Image 1 (cartoon, rainbow, N blue to C red):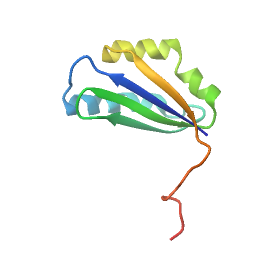
Image 2: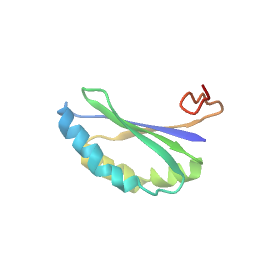
Image 3: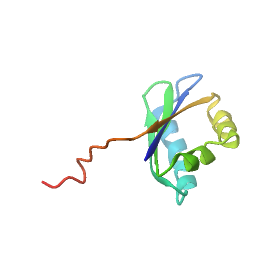
Length: 99
């Protein structure tokens, strides 16, 4: 399993409702993406947005986060996205744990 953390420092603060609306508008673009198990949209309430993606494999994650994708993100938010890839060697899953 691979996780990808995408962080974007906005050039200026944006109202929460505008940030959420932009997230909701982009979410359908990820439906059915090969290898993408989950995407969490992130907002710090100030000037930082991003995403936390859970993938089956790194190659599929890298294919999505291409130069074209980076350009679209930069055009949308007016800032460059920083991408970090992580291997997930251990997972605690309380949601799926038996009680």
